[in-house]
Image 1 (cartoon, rainbow, N blue to C red):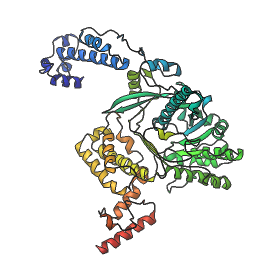
Image 2 (image 1 turned 60 degrees about the horizontal axis):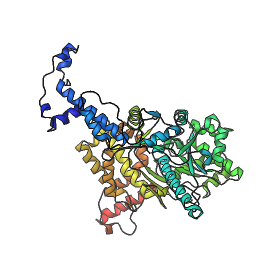
Image 3 (image 1 turned 90 degrees about the vertical axis):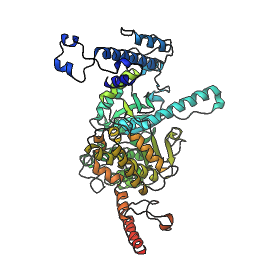
Image 4 (image 1 turned 120 degrees about the vertical axis):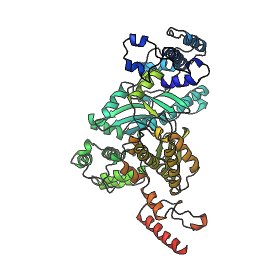
Length: 560
């Protein structure tokens, strides 16, 4: 109301609002205290009437946006000018959703009639040819992997329709994929219940300060299993030949690392899985993968691909190393088979800002789309996924490269290092500076010129530690990050970015920081680097690389 009042006072169409009139005496007669009347927030009667008219106009516009009816424009404007509340609109366009309705398969036709984007492809789990079993289903995986798979299924549906129109000459349609969520932890039951009540669908609401908001119903998740309910059935499902990919977003904790980066044998989940009979009902994500691969080997079924989608450096290598480490404690022959090229562990770089879903997000989805969703997902429009190619779309994996923002490359390391050092480390730097400056949201901190300038200079200092990235202009990438961080509609919290800071530093900028320090942040021309440049075009992976940098720096100082 304050914002509307400020705009109204500045608008030439409302000269009567430029000066505030004294509060009408009726306010006191209605029981308001004198303190309330004297408050700076008290609104005079003529201004209150004008704000009421504006609110009625906004209501008409919201109805117009929901119905998509041009015919409602004049009617809404007339109702906005009327002193009485506007009656219900009856546009000539598609029938709108009068009351918010719970999300379900039966509600899809009504939602589609109300201009909501819904799945048009078949969602019967019995028709799925190949499954992606996802461990650790949460907000990010639903805004990223599941959304991209939904987009692919929509494209495949259109291809099937086109092939059907062409008859036998149209060629065969691609095999249909589907996602099945796999829950392991006690808190996964809440999401399982929420998805089951909605036929495993949910709303993905994309928010941007410039492009605006848009929502769609995602239907690529077609099943969900909670392994502790029936461990044998869960493992059989993963060992079935129809399971082609086991993906995971379990965070760094899910890989059961100790302080030295090796398998934490003191972890309660690991201790359970390594106990006698522990892999019959595994509790860790690593144990589930080892147990399922052991079943497939024993049954003569080819292994599935393990696809890590966690925000960790070289996540595929990490997943392989930890799975092999656990398998070594159980069966060395099994461990050797998992470590061989027979089992694929591609690395991937994932990127999409996805804050935790709040009640306000559920209310927004209900009021904007007319959908009651128990657990929607809110995210920014930007999506990026760079994956080391495995198998190819001819049977080995879905054809995700047909989706915008997806790349399959031979080496994901340059893209990953770019994201970890420029985006993730910048997030951490922004979190501490912004929070200590008194801000609580990312976009509020970025609106401060001092903080924004700090972030720009910080990225410019970090950028030299990033090797060349094929097809990417790092200056443009930094500008895109500044804009993404400034997106007020995401309302991402600085506290979320500041959590687990030490672990994030180790995975985002530790080696880059050491390299930057070792070189003393000196700037060199291209010919100064010689034929074997130790930095900027090469990864600093270990202490040997760091020692080489330090020796090179000493030699360069002597030469200088």
